[in-house]
Length: 257
Image (cartoon, rainbow, N blue to C red; front, side):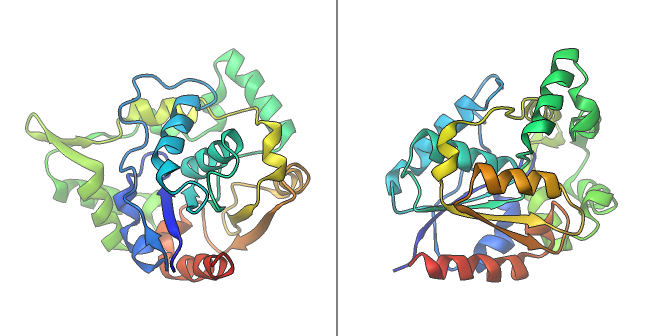
């Protein structure tokens, strides 16, 4: 019997962007939240409202489902399991921006000064283009960007189809740059003690690294039940190398049957 799979997307990328990866995962993929927090009017520090949404979405398979979350979605998977232990059978975290205690102290200090954007992707998202005359124009635009350099064109096409909606004669981002930026600027700087007993797997980028050695050392102490596995790629590896990642994920799923 296949495991129920709950997939949670990264900030700025609707779940449908991961169509290639999800098609290769050997599990019972539950209908994902296309855009996490779409009905949440305000982003607050700590992601509490987002976490509520994850818990509600996953409750139908309580104790049986496996969470797979990329970046923002990985952070929310961890927070949901900490808030409601036993919600997931296992969690697979794909390069979530959960840093060492020392880094989070610095982040909190910069936040108080209004300077957090300088050290987060918010610096770029604040200026992100969010309106296009056509999907074709958007496809050409995103294909030329460094962020998508290693991403297959078919995946960029999925992003353009799911990540844009037609409004007033133009195609605009489904996840507005203001919301994307707010999420980057409210990264959790505190985590509940319950994370210590959570079991799961961390797969982190090992080519262009988000999590460095100090971060991984902290993970080992703070969450000793979560294994740590490198993956050759950038933070975008779930979109860059879906086949290779699916093989690694399927190996983890086999252990959870």
